[in-house]
Structures are given as C-alpha cells and as structure tokens.
Image 1 (cartoon, rainbow, N blue to C red):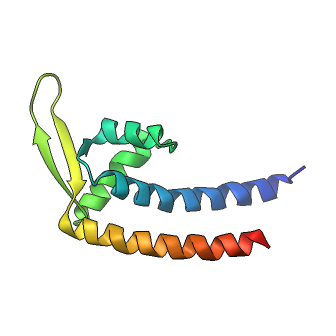
Image 2 (spheres, rainbow, N blue to C red):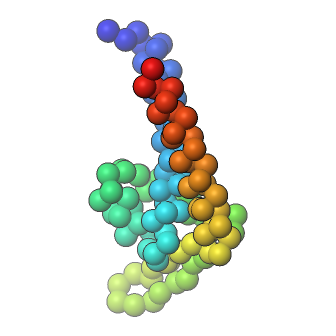
Amino acid sequence: MVKARTAEAIDSTWQEIRRGSIVLAALATLREEHYGYSLRQALLDSGLEVSEGTLYPLLRRLEGAGLLGSRWELGEGRPRRYYRLSPDGEAALEELRCGWRKLAEVLSGMLAR
C-alpha cells in the first residue's frame, strides 16, 4: 500500500507531466482548425481528457504567445471562436516534437532498466 504522502507526491508529479503533454497535444491537434469544444472532443477521442477549466485558459495563453491564431464565426446558434496554429506555432510544434522524441527515447531507456 502506498503511503498518503507518497500518493500525493505521485499525483503532483503526474499532474506536472500531464500539463506539459496537454500543451503539446493541443498544438498538434490545432494543425487543423477547431473551436474550443471540438478541440476538447478531438483530444478526448485520442484518449486525452482535458477539462474546460484547463483548455480555455491554455488556448488564451497559446494565442497570447503568438502560437495560435483565431477567428470568430457567427452562424446559427452561439458565436464560435476557431483556433489554428500560427506560423510561429508550427515552428514551435516542430521544435517541441523533436524535443519530445529525444526525451521519450532517453526515458524509455532509463525506465527499461
């Protein structure tokens, strides 16, 4: 049985790993245009559950950093804000993808021991 203090440390560490992974997953998914709910659904369909309270602030931060562009669409129903990678976002995604692959290779070797 895992002690409560150890369980808290595991949970905290897992949340940190997940937080960075969500950023990378969102950027990768936003190579195609999505509005918030459709992005959340696409991530969920890929096996990554992300709460609205995490996703919408993330979209604002990524747009503020220049990694995303957005546009409003006024159609039937509520207006929707669509997001897509900006040219800087595409460059950042490629750099992050390379870093992720290197890190995954290193960690796989370490964890296999």
